[in-house]
Amino acid sequence: MATVVESPASPALATHHSWVGNREVPGRAGARPAISPATGEAFARASLLDAAQASEAIAAASAAALGWRALSFQERGAILLRAREVLLSEAADIARLITREQGKPPAEAHAAEIFPSLETLKHLAAHAEQALRDEPVVSDVLLLAHKDARVVYEPFGVVLVITPWNYPLFMALSTVAAALAAGNAVVLKPAPATTLVGLKLGEIFRKAGLPDGVLNVVAVDDRLAPALVEDPRIGKVVFIGSVGTGRKVMTSAATNVTPVLLELGGKDPAIVCRDADLDRAAKGIVWGAFMNAGQTCVSVERVYVEAPVAEAFLGKVLEETRKLRMGDPLAGEVEIGPMTMERQRAIVEDHVADALAHGARAETGGARPKGPGFFYPPTVLTNVNHDMRAMRDETFGPLLPIMAVADLDEAVRLANDSEYGLTASGWTRDATTAARLQRELRAGVVTINDCISSLAEPAAPYGGMKRSGIGRSHGVLGLREMTQSKFVSRDRSRGSMVWWYPYGAPFESFMTAANPALHARSLVARLRHQLGLAASARFWNRLSPLDLLRNLDKLF
Image 1 (tube, rainbow, N blue to C red):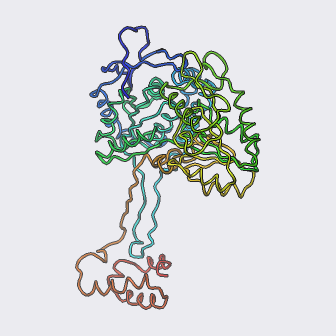
Image 2 (cartoon, rainbow, N blue to C red):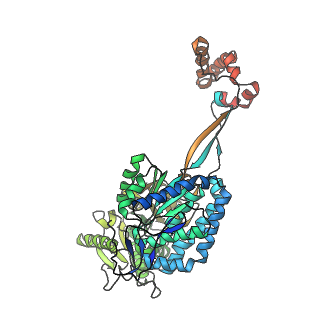
Image 3 (spheres, helix red, strand yellow):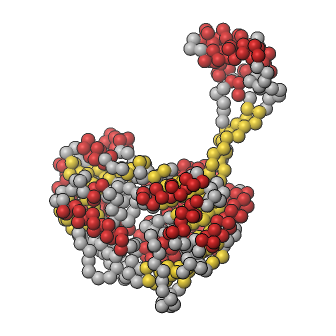
């Protein structure tokens, strides 16, 4: 996206700068306004780094990486805990900044951004060492059983993190903190629409005592992003955002065969079974569809409800939806704030218009309100089908299409009929049905009688199937995504290995006996050839009688 560069005519706006080497660096490539989505007006601006300055940020991270890696898990964890203290002490101001720049209500900023960030920092400080400790490898091969071997997890060096605008604090902080806990230095590029929240992370970690250069937060024009990804000093790229941009990131990363972790979009289904607690399902799905104005990659974007309860369920959904208050989150108590960007609101309008043109009904909402800001009301659609964009494409807005289905078989089939596979939810009181949904739904996360909240569980892996992404964040798997696995071994024996030179007839005879001695189908055949091994000097050169006793199981 081309950057909107502010003209010099508005000097009264406060200007914020990137963090490079733990100091604020004014950018030389102009400035980008920070737009309040509630008013559509600029309230601050961020100076933009040019290409040379962005390269200096990577250089700072590269220079700091070895020293940061050398610290113990306890030392790195202590800084994460201090960052948690800073975040907690400034929570009210940070929540207000999130509201002002991104649009979610302050209460939601506390619940969906600050709370899970605090939990993540605590979890990583406590569990990173255990998750990344060396893992012994016990050989199943008799002739290798004398080796000490293990898998070790090493940091990449510099991780480039590119984060989205919908959860500008939590998505950035959880990813950055995992990379730091694993021993990496980080270059963070926040989304253009929420640059100020991203820059706040640099300030938080500076106050926490993070060494110079370990975290660098760069405000740059999106046109510089490919150069960041293609920089050979980058060890791994983490991108959170749309499928389309994810493809571009993969293309740029291929320049140096740089590994990528992609957390992409979703079209997350909910299945409401005929035995569901309809009150609970309606409340949960309305929240799951409309929180953050529907701008959540794991939000409920389509519902399949079994026909016998469809009418009752719809009535409860409409009752809950009509209770929601929409407005400027800084002007009063609301549940629904503005959408973050006008272009995203236009996508919602396109999906609604397409659905209505093909026979859908808007039971509530369905049109933008008058007045300033990027508001769009919570909208419930019925009479929908898979020919409509609202049921196929990611909407990323306050839209809830509901489709009645004949039975659970049809619900599962339609839920899986998507190029996405991020999350899915099922609503049922029956344990057998729940187990079936968890087994058959093709998604990286499946929850029963809840939605979305699994993202806030720092111990749970998060990620998608199909076009919803590559890799996992959070939990043990997320930490290991921030490392490279290495197999190491040490040979404790003396003398030559059995397969070393010279070859010749004795070696051929030895291997002729060794293969059936270990792999013949019949026990009698294995024993016969094992006697042949026992007569070989090469065998006893590699294995002492004590070693043989310890590994008798490998013979049988």
